[in-house]
Every structure is written in C-alpha cells, then in structure tokens.
Amino acid sequence: MSESVAAAPTSPALTRVRRAILVVDIVESVQIMQRHESEVIERWLRFVDEVSHQVLPALGGRLVKSLGDGLLLEFGSASQAGAAAAELHARIASGAVGSGAGLQLRCGIHVADIVVDQLDIFGSGVNLAARVGCLAGPGQTVISAAARDEIVLGLDAELEDLGECFVKGLDEPVRAFRVQPAAPWQVPAPRAAAPEGELRAMVAVLPFEARLGGGTGAEAALGDWVAEGTILLLSRAPTMRVVSRLSSAAFQGRRMPLRDMAACLGADYVLSGTYRSAGADVELMAELAEGRRGEVVWAERITTSVPDLLAADSQALAALVHGVQTAVLATEFGRSLLQAPPNLKSYSLQLGAISMMHRSGRDDFDRAAQQLQHLIERHPRLAAPRAWLAQWYVLRVTRGLVADTAAEVAQALDQVRRALDVDPNCSLALSMRGFVECHMLRDLDRAWSTLNAATDLNPSDSLAWLFKGVVQSLWGQGQGALDMVLEAQRLSPLDPLRYYYDALSAPAALAAGRLELAAEFAQRSLRANRAHSPTWRALVIAQSELGRLEQASDSLAQLRLLEPGLTVQSYLARSPAGANDTRRRYAEALRRAGLPDN
Image 1 (tube, rainbow, N blue to C red):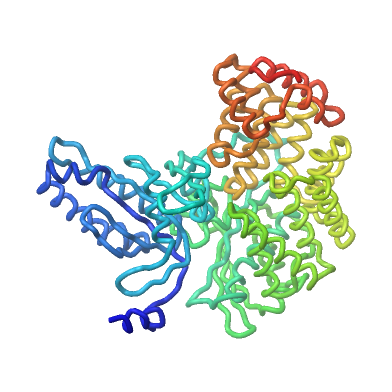
Image 2: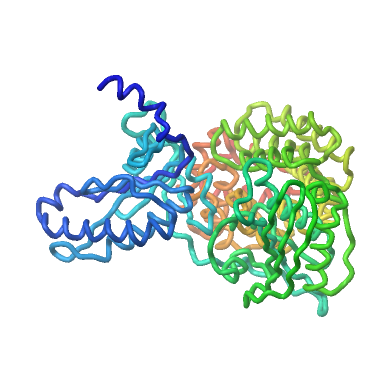
C-alpha cells in the first residue's frame, strides 16, 4: 500500500494545471438535515443533477465531488467559476424545504496550480478555496486575490475588498473579496455634443481568435498582436476613438451577443476576426459590425505572413485599417508606424508584464519589472517597454510599496526620458511624465502641457485624459475635469485598474460640485480597494460638503488608519502650485469632519 501511494505523484494520469476551484457548502446543513432529512436529500439530489447536466456543461466546469451537503467543482477560469456560483445560489433558492424556506449556500473560489486526475483534484489551493468559502455568509461568494485578478469588474461581478483575513489552518492572513452581482451596465454620460457634422465613432477591436487550434506560447499571441497593431493604427485617426486594448481583451473567448459586447464597451462598431497559420503563412478573416444592431458592415479575407505582421509598415494591418476606415467614416486616414517588439516572443513577454503589473499579488507585480527590464536589454531602441516600466514605478508609489518616493520619481522620470529619446511621439511615456509632474513634482502648468501633447498624439489615450482631469480638478475647473475623466472611463470602460479610474474621477466630480457623483465614484473605488487613502479623502470631503458629518467622521477614521499623521496643515502643504483655492475648500471640509489642524 505504501509503495502504491508513493508512486502516485508520478502516475501518467496525474496532471498539474492551473484551475479555478469552487467549493460549495449548504449553510447550517446539520440542523436542516435533522429537521427535514428526506426533503433536504430529495432537493439536494435534484440540485446536483441540475448542476451536472445544466450548469457545468454551459460553463465548462467539472464536478469533482458531491459530499451530501457540499460540492467541489473545477473550472478553467475564475470568471466561469464566479458565473457558476451565481447560478448555483439562484437555483438552490428556487426549491422549498420543510417550512417553505429554500436552502442557502456559501461559496469560495481560488485560482491555483493543482494536481488533477480523472476522479479528484489535489493541492493546497483546494484547501484555500474551502477556507475562503468559510468567510462567506448565507447566499454569498468570497474569492481569493488570485481569483480576483481574473475577474473583470463591471462585467463578471462587483467586488468588495474584505482586506487581510485570518482563516483556520493558515498562519498568514489571506486577502479576500466578497462577490456581488454586476450592476446593469451603464455607459458614462457623454461629453458635450460635438460640432454638427463631426464624426467620432467609437471602435472596439477584439483579439483575433485562432481557427482549428492555433498553437501555444508565442504563436498563440498572434491574435493579440493583430488586435494591438490595429488599435495602434486606428487610434491615430483624428475622427475616431478606440476602446483600449485592455478593455476589449476582457471579451476574448466569451460567447455573448456582439450587441451586448458593444453596449458594455460603449462602441459604435466592433472589429473581430479569426486567423489561421501554417508555418510562416497567415490568413486573417476580419468582420466589422455595427454595434447597436450587430449587423456586419464590412468583411475581408487577408493573406499575409508572420514577418509582414511584425513589420512596422505591415501591409496586412494597413489593409485592415483601410477597410475599417472606409466602412465607418469613408474619409482619408493617415498611416502611422507600429512601435512594438520585433518578434512574437518579445511581444508575448510584454503582454505578460502588462498583465502582471495589474495583479494584486506582490510577487506578480515584481516579476512584471523583471520582464520589462529583460525586454529593454533585448530591445534598447524601443520606447514602449520603458514607458510601461515608468508606469510600474509610479504604481509602486501609489500602491505604497516604497518609503523613498524621491528615488522612485527619479527612476520613473529617467525611464520616460529614455523612452522619449527613442520615440518622441510615444503618448504613453508623455502620460506618465505628466502624471509625475502633477502628483510628485507639483507643477500643474508643466503637467498640463505634457498631457496635452499626449492627447494630441493619441486622442484615445485613456490615461492621458484621466490625468488631464486631475490637473483640471486641482485648478478648480470642475466641469472640464469631469468631462475629461468621463472621457477616460469611456475609452477604457473595463480597465483592470478601474478602481484607480474611479479614485481619480471622484476629485473631478468634487471640483464640478457633483457631490453625490463624487461619493459614488469614491465608494465604488473603495469597494474594490480599501487601501487607497486619496479615495478616502475624496469621500470625506464629499460627505462633509453634503452635510453628512456623521458619515464623514466615520470615513475620516478609516482615512487616519492609513495616514495617522494627517492634519489640515500637512494636507495643505502637499498642494501643487496653482491649486491653493481648491485645496483650501477641501481643507475646510476635512476640518468640519473632525481632522485636526496640527
């Protein structure tokens, strides 16, 4: 027997894979079973049958175990597991037991590398999913930080940050999030109407999908490469806005009506397609659909090669952009060069670094910098990796991971300087420089000039619009600030850092006198990330100016846990040049909420 157990890990039937684990338990199962045993058993058996034959096939899941009062399920992604949990909660509540009340579940989800065979799954990740589920109340789902990194806010669900939680059997706390159903999608209110006759269609470009398999590793990134290159070219068209790649990529592999995708992204047109590769040869099949009706308005088959797709003046991508431009606007479109790593392997590294930079875990965040440094060493004449590394340094400060902010500011400025030396027209690098000039160098005039240069180069740069809104709000230009942050949110409605967009949108709404909207932005941001002190400040100010002094006092207590040394005078001392009137107004609101002067 001992020899058999020892040999099990090397069995060919065992495979190590990354999976989303969903652990499901009936709330108070022992008491309910004692009172209504036969009814509970009958309802549970019907429920397991529904799960096995209806829920799991639709969501690509597998039933690993049914334990009489719980389930162990596995899925390919956290979004699938989250959708399944919501479906299970709804289905279990639909059947009465005993006095007529429905059963209730608690669910826990974790994403981890586990060992899988035909009958069971093994590993510490399975135990962690169960422990996280213990944090859920009746009818609730709680997920780990690893699962949260795969959830698209606003599309898959809304999340409430529970902070660092201690669970049974683990010495270290676990970061956990309570899942709430995604609210009905609402596109941000439009900016003031454009002059009559001006066309500014919003285009979303989805990652192209492989036909008949499609390969793995670097080859699998080809569809993302096509979408990225097309977005870069389209974003230079002065009469067109383009949804950011990070938002449109959230729909990769999702089976949902195109009209729903367009509505979620606020897009007038959606470009999608497939590709088939055979060696160096590639065939693209592209379709452009009108978003509201879902009707295809243009389609094209393009035969090309991998070297052409990777070229700065790719003929295939130029033909794709020309077709979109002609179908949507029927006007002249200027070409621009692609600036990206010159081969698929490097591009895959960059995609991975960008993804890890937006994750919750510290290890993933640190690995993002290592990969970007590797790209810079390999391609010293490319601007994009340096611009992304500058953003990494900025995020390192905003996430509170370093004490010496001056050193990080110097590093970020050095990276944007080097990026702009390589490519003076890199809007991402200009956006990052403007952010540092505003928040860290406190030079609003200089930041405004830099950010204007970024949006002149790339009108679809959502970060540039977001940071312009920050500068306008510090100047007290409320309506202009609100217009700009709403433009940023519309250009990247499903951004992985949506909490950050909301956090910077709150002061813009404050400056515009939209106090309820400011509180809404701040509260939505804090539900996703409770550790961002500037958002707590915005919430305190909004509540104070609304006359809700008791709520403002409670929020101030949370703020002072994060910034125990904060006073009215220290707050005013941080004021950038040109922001004095706005800061004095906010300082008075903080004082009314109970913040001491010194």
